[in-house]
Image (tube, rainbow over all chains, first blue to last red; front, side, top):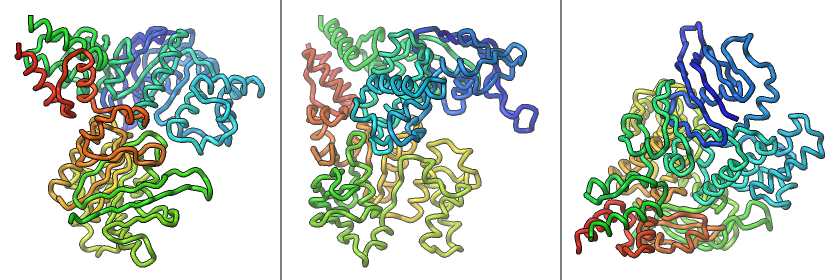
Length: 287
Length: 281
């Protein structure tokens, strides 16, 4: 399902002396089946933007069209069926493991589907499927979520979202606090889910993650969209203007170019593609 | 002989009697004034170890030896040791106890019954050290995660600890917040060379900065040494769910393609070598 923003503005505490414009006339299309990364510094409006996507917030101006749901500033135009919207848009908030609460893993994961009207047996079935999908076997079903390690808890929390089978997944810093191997596993899982046509929205400060996984990057600054492009386009620019970090691969490549190694920035997305490009450049020079 | 800040011998710990061993027969020592990084995967026992060192869990198994500045946690010494240790935890929201930055820094001082007439001066000095002097009367909800961690650090530094424990103090922060905290810690260390730091992290770039690195996996220390020594054991690191620093990974990838360089952990060194390589005909 695509998400379309049309001239969306949002003001916190409107009509009060504390009024604060968090979004200012945002026009944006997030395509179906793609991964869109949303980047920008703290306070740039990233969280306000994603909260419009499942109508946790309603725009104060303009509208957001999520599939057939219209989240509009105009109350008459606004769709009423929040229930099915929230079923379609799954939100994985930062540190989702803090939201675990049930006494067994399977009950915790089944909570979402139960809430969306599934019968107990069905919901447990959906929970088991989701748990297998995130790589937790039967031995976890009856355990307490509170006795698991940090990485395992994160997986349980993600399974809880997957169990409701959303067609849009909003991920807020999904890998922070995870060790490198667990982080990689988690992202591989989302790539797998994307193959079913799920739209992924990735909110992150981690530019290595953006480079590796995003199809499109949306740069936000003070409530406005500064740029929408591919990660390669963004990272070949000078990033200071946007106060973003440069991914490690690009940082090294740019330094190498400065030192006179004739390197091409095209197609760089991880350590091995950088090594490949460096080899090519060095061999070319030797000839 | 070098003075030791921490001595641990045959330390084992489990949360439940006869339960799984979270720490299994660990031995290591930390020299006074060293910056040591302890790295390990999620669930490796890192945080448990930090809490034991800080004297938060005292029920360690018999035959385990734990001495901090030549004292062990017994009735006589435990409050003395706790007075020498400062700890900054992972989640900035879990340790902000005051209703303003000033109150938060004062909390530790009040606990140590510092003379109230001296408190203001100490608070302002510590806030200045972490660059938060402009925020003294701000409430925590107006601060970013990085700022909250800076306040936590100020609260700890106000007590002038001899051993600073950082328990994943940067892992919940964005890259900018991370850099702020790390450069602050480095600065404090420079000004006070006697300060011993144990930083628990899974950020290998941070670990590469330390004087000495300990690698914990499944409750055991599997590697220790300088950064270069430790990161040359790729197989063990991979088994322990850890990466090597970027420069090391790139060096390895280049080697696999026929360009052999020294295995440096520093990006700039690697780049220098690459340039030399290309000018050699």
